[in-house]
Length: 452
Image (cartoon, rainbow, N blue to C red; front, side, top):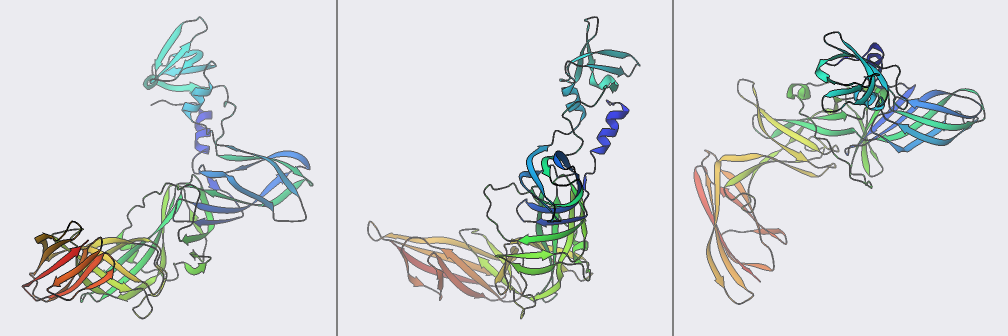
């Protein structure tokens, strides 16, 4: 493995574990790969024009979003110019900067090669010695390289450089705010279905991902649930799985305080938290709650002509046990076996759901309930009018009766001219049936639709 000299090693270590060192840090995280950071730091200024550096900023900062002001309004500092430097030191960067400059290379046999670096690509170093002789040294044979100094233009940490004009000399507390990508959060829910399948115990967690390039130590953390409009659509990083055991463990007082904020919902953690770089942090959103649920079966031939979808349905209201805003996220549903083992029933995603709204969670497809649709007749009445007759067979192999909802999509100007069962039309393109199917029995539904 290639090694560099002690100076380079020290520089590399300085670039690891960047931490935003500030007297006060506040981080607001959105669902859409966006974070807004506010920091208060003490900076030193000289009266008149000068330059000051603001280090330890995230590598994914949006430098165009930086805001600056002094906490003490009796003093004045005007920012004349801002430069964001992010050309970080690394072995490859140093090699690049040392092209046409002299270096010393030590190989694994103890030989020293001194000369001008001509190239550092293709897994080899190309040197021209003082005698004019060209040496090609394979990278895997290099054990040490001496560089006289750190090349100009390389820095160890992403840094904002400000040219300023100040009316005083000395330290001053400065409030700096900025946006950064690499911060995002999603809600993760775990639902435990009761033995009688009439109650769902729901636990909500926030999964906060920080890939911004900085650590925010002892920060005030706020999460925004809602869809904000932005000029450019950012990339959204997929969240990693949470462990079920962790999600179900109750933690009194660990959750967020929720409130409406503008047209969104804000969740504020009532304690400080450190959000480390390259970390997924999980914090309880709310205390575990029980919701009264119904299990429903849906046959939708346009989506699946052979299987019946199983749905857990509940209303997000206080009467049924919830009545709290539910941020968009993934819901995993479990049920305990007779021996206490947890069995995953399925998972689904919900959108941002305010209180008093219905929630339908798809669990999976029924094993013992089958369905099939087929067209039995077709008649062309005129060049613009057609009639089709459909037959839907429902078969229930369970030892208890069930109710199956049939939702058939129809388009154009349509009319049902004949039907074996009563139906409704919840919208202009949906024909809906509620069909009781007896235990170990079957039912056939037929209807004729005329379209023009």
